[in-house]
Every structure is written in structure tokens, then in C-alpha cells.
Amino acid sequence: MATGGPAPAVAELARRRGFYFRASAVYEGGAGFYTYGPQGAALKANVEARWRERFTDQEGHLQVDAPTIMPEAAFAASGHLDGFDDAMVTCGACGSAHRADQLIEATTEIDGAEEMAPDAQAAAIADAGIDCPTCGASLAGEPVEPFNLMFPTPIGPGSQEPGYLRPETAQAIFVEFPRLKEYARGQLPFGVTQIGRAYRNEISPRRGIVRTREFTQAELELFIDPDDPGPEPTDWGDTTVQLWSAADQRAGRQPQQQTVAAAIAEGVLANRWIAYHIAAAAAWYAQIGVDPARLRFRQHRSGERAHYASDCWDAEAEVGDGWIEIAGFAARGQYDLQHHAAAADADFSMYVPLAEPRTETVVEVDVDMSTLGPRFGAAAPAVAAAVERACKADPGCAADATVTVTVDGEPVEVDTAAVSVTESEQTIAGRQVTPAVIEPSFGIDRTVYTLLVHAFDEDTLDGEPRSVLRLAPAVAPTEVGVFPVVSNAPALVERAEAIAAELRTAGLRVTYDAGGSIGRRYRRQDEVGTPLAVTVDAAATEDETVTVRARDTGAQVRVPADALVAVLRTMLEADGAIDAAAAAGHPVEPVG
Ligand code: GAP
Image (cartoon, rainbow, N blue to C red; front, top):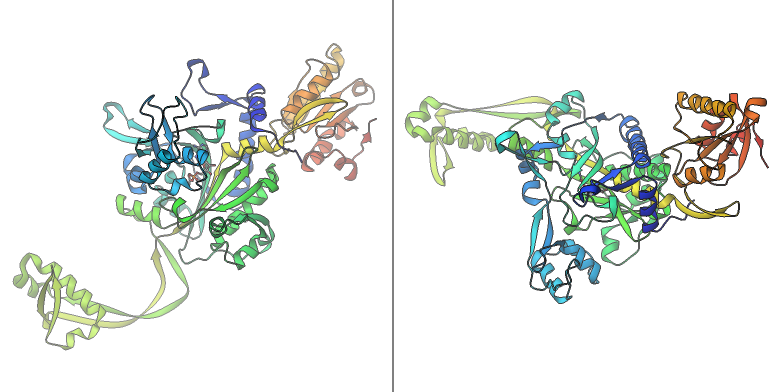
């Protein structure tokens, strides 16, 4: 396992070796936008592919790919237009804007500044004597104000229709729910996933790809019956995780290491659907190379939760200079679907059959409008509705000569000769419900950053210091480097090129490199995390063998060329372990 690198070393490696760099730098483009270079784009695509395999394919969920610009009405309904704010303090001297809670937490002992009211934040800034990080002027006396993080964009010419870049991929799923429930054939629970861009006009973008203004989310919206308590823990309950409950945070206690099943039994994980996805995420993170010792799940304290969430846990990774949130697991309840249903006047509900059909007494009330109309005029429908409600609640109402109801605050007496009440036994087989939502939401960029930090290592190999990325083969940009041992022997070069082509055809991610000494080529691939290197030397044209070298140890084996694909696959599946091939019975010989 890598020791993990300090943030500056990783950022420098990322820039130098083409993982990511600031976008539009030639024009000094706006802060908070990053371009993934060749290595980073491949790493990110592999992380997305592994996520899709685990959280879409293995779960049997549906997938969508929706537009990133959405109409204002969608965000008025979702609550983002009014409530998606961060607290901002603006420097009166230089005009630069800063996130108030971050300034307070970086400068004082206060934890949870995000939960403070704006006035309290302004007072804390004044009390702590916090100065503007840009120009050094005092921020005391400056107001703290909400700043909406959404990017507005007019849709079409003439700015007729206001729109916004989506601040989370989730809303693009919720607005399509009336169609999606049809594709799910009306069955709950069902999940819809989406990997795509989200945009937030962050007040203080920082730490490279950790807090940007355009980023990639991989979100799963799981639609459930609100009464569904979630699955009973089976083998997934055995997953051990570090959990930091809101109660432990408030009491100043450290996170607890426990199995998910134990946390459910103790009520630490009160929501079994969230528990299931925390277990799934912990296993997935380990598979792609997040160090389990540097991963924890932290519950939101009540003041921290988003406007839609009733319970929320973040996955947090330690990245050398502190912990960052890399994913969130929220119980969003019926909030989103109910709000879109009301605003769009569309049907966001589903019919849920009861496990056991039951018999109920159904009361039907019929009010004779030909009697009520002449007597009450325009108020007749309201009077009839009030009578209907009263008699449904008390089916015996018609036994009296009159029934008295309240309409617009006034008592109204209605002759029961105009009212007929019937009661009948009916079998109820199901009910119409608005589903609740469980949402695991992963930040892909922060996952990529965490993988780089956790994989980064510096060691000495063959007497030489080197930096190496110990990336898991499942996500490494390149799985196999192929090198002719020298570049001035045409037969050997031709053989090496042919081997690289064969490996690509077999579906492996291959880099061919004939430039510089073989030692330098090994170092180049070590630094970008390539787990295995195939070296083609004279033996390749004589006895048809090549050598395979492991990134992590430098150990080498000689392999018959016709067994190469199978040998490499075995090693890659064993996390790049070179001895896995001999253990699996492949014809390999140790070198040296
Ligand atoms: N739909 C729920 C939602 O968007 P969130 O906690 O705001 O929840 C989910 O975001 C994930 O998206 C975070 O855990 C983080 O990994 C990522 N994320 C959020 N804001 C980001 C930003 N400005 N830059 C990079 N990643 C970000």
C-alpha cells in the first residue's frame, strides 16, 4: 500500500504528467475550471466505468443522460432558486469575495461555522479580527450575505426564457420521473443513475479539482415506497467501516470502527437503505484504490443538512492536509417529487400494491345540487364539499333532519333530505403514493484526486529514488507498457509494435514507448501508475519470450509470447501481483 503523497507533490505530478491542469490558462481563464490531460482523462473515464458497473449494472438500475441546462421553473420547484446559497463576505477594500464559514473555520476554533446565522458569522469574523486573504484589509463590520451558487443562462435569443446550469445531476432525473416510472413498469423500488456535469458558481474554488465550478457527479436516485424500511443486512452487513455519527461529533468522540450490521443494530445507521449504500461504497472505494484507513463516513449534524434531507452521511477521505467530502448519502424523502408534482401539475405518484389486500368500509356521500344551487347560489359547491367531508367523517349525519357545516367561517345548516349516504365493504388492493428518494451522490473529481493522493509514493528501486503511483489496475490509465529494449534494431521494434497491437486487440489499455533508456521508460510508466511493463528483447525473435515487470516491486518474469495475454490478465486481476501468474500455473520463469 502506498504511503500517500503530500498535496503539493501530487498537484505537481498531476500537472507535469498530464493528469489535470487549469483550463484556458493562456487566457488566464476563470478560476475553478480544470482540463483533464491524457492521463487524467483516462483515469477519470475508468473511475466512471467502474462506478457504472457497480452502481448501475450490478444493481440492475436504469441510466439516463439528460441536458445540463434546465428551465428556471425546475429550480423554483426544487428549492435551489431560493435556498442554494453559501454565506459570502465581501472585502470593502479590494472587492474580493470569500466564503464566511471557511474563513471562520480556518482562523478560529469554531467547528460547524456553516450552521451559524449570517449575523453570527459576521460577529465571529469581527471578534476573531479576520483580515481579507486577498489584500489584508480588516473584514470586521462587513456583512455576511447569502450568495446563490447557480449559474444563470438565458435560453434562446432575446433572453425570453431564464434557465440555469444544473447544480446537481439529480434534478435532471426528478423532472423526468413521470416517464421513468413507466420504464420501471410501475414497480418500486427502482433506481435511476446518471454520470454527468454539475455547475456551481463557488465563492472560493480551491485545491485544484477538489472544489471547482464545473465538476462531474455520479448520482443514483433510488425511488422507494416511503414505508419500505430497506433491506435486512446479509453479507453486506459484514463490511467494516469508520462511522462518525452526529452524536459522537457533538460529544467530541472519535469515529467508531464497526460493521454496518452492528451500526444498524445500535441505531447508528438508522436508515437501512443508506446503510446498504455505505457498505457498497466502502467496498467499491477499496476496489478502485482508496485506502480504507483513510476513509470515513460522517453523519451531517442537523444544521448542516441540505434543505431536502432528513438524514445524510458523507464519505470523507483523508488527503494529506485534512479530510474532504467525496460522496454524500442522503434520505431526500418525498421532497423533490412532491414539489415537482405541485409545480408542474403532473402525476409523480405510483400505485403500490398492498402485501395483503384488506377490506375497508367505504362511505359515499351524494349531495343534491338541484336543492343546494337555488338556496346557496355561488357558494353551493363549497357547501356541498363541506357536507361531503362532514358526512364521510360521520356517516350517521343523515339520521338528523339537518347537518351543520362551516363555510368561510360561517355556520350553514343543510336539510339532510338533500343528502344521501351509502356505506359498502370494498377490497383495497393497493394505494397511490409519492415515492421517497434515497440518494448516493459521488463526486468523480474528488475521487480521482483521492486516488492520486493515496496512490502516490516515493521509494528507492535498484538503488535509485523514484516517485510512483500505485494505482489499482482497475482504474490505471494504462495497464501495460510495451517497450522494445533498444530502438535501433528494426526486427525487435517491429516485434514490439506487433505485441502492443495484439494486446490492444485483446482489450488491454496499452502504451507503446521506444524513447530513451529502458530505465527511464520504466520510471515514466511508474509515475503514471502503469502496473505492468512488457519488455521485448532479442529473445522475442529467438525463443519467442518477453519479460514482464511489476511496477510495485520491479520484479520480472519471462513469459512465452503466446501466453502473454492470459498472463497479463491474471496479474492485473491480482492487483498487478507478478507472482499470481506462476501461482495460477502459467509457464513463467523468474528473471534474475
Ligand atoms: N445531489 C446531491 C448533491 O449534489 P452534494 O454533497 O452537494 O450533494 C455531491 O454533492 C458530491 O459532489 C460531493 O460529495 C462532492 O464529491 C461533489 N462536489 C460537490 N461540489 C463540488 C465542487 N464544487 N467541486 C467538485 N466536486 C464537488
